[in-house]
Length: 398
Image (cartoon, rainbow, N blue to C red; front, side, top):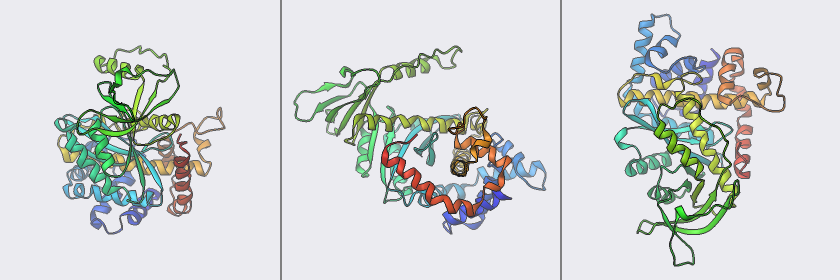
């Protein structure tokens, strides 16, 4: 009951009358029944988790109807926009992580945008595309335009991406009036401001292990589509870990290993201190943890195991997972602000929280559902928002 009331109040406050009342009620039902996500996000498992006096067969059919609801799918951008304005309209600045992920269904990949936060990022928008459309420049451009529509216009936005996003992506982000931080490949050439010679990125020398440095303002690329910004370098100390189990994809493993060992060459439109900018880029791994929460079969929602085929079905399942993650993150933050997180960890460590907000919320749903109180949420919401904003301004996200 606590879950349903909370979800109803949240969607009423955020969405208001932007979508049909029946579709909103449908979302409330599925979110409230799946909030502890102690189930695999497949149609059959979702159906078995629903609370109803009808037969399991009928509930599975209801889940199938939900994932095939093309009218609700058309409202996804509107829902994301309403939630983004509800949670972030009073912010000054946000850091947005963007990346591709696969494995949710054969032949489809997901492009997601998440806000960097404590430990895990908070997803705010996603799109599902076929495998042939992955890393396509036009798909990236359309995604950014829709993301621009979702994010409140008053915010200062910094986009962070990995090396899979190239020079044309940087230009697209800058045209929207946002800042960008991204890793660049060794194939690029750059020209330092005030010089006539061109240099290759692969010839850059790193200052030392753990030392961030700035090369200054540069022009990246010799073509007409060259983009201006700043280059920073950083080489992290290797952890020394050795994989003991044979990887399913050894070629990928080797590529990522070399990718990590070679050090970072970062391009950004921001003229900041090198260590400050590198600390921002390090938050990029948060979105990988976010993907793990959604796809992992043991610790997450197990979306990897679903056997749905069809873009609408995959899109709706991922959308449901994103909303569950979003609510869980804020609920976990509430639990910590009430100093209740100590009840969910061993007494060995007393000076910090050892569980992620997502896992903390998952446990509290079962043991203290009364904490999911809408009035309490409203009372401390402004303080929680300000806490995040202060971390952003100090560049001290953790």
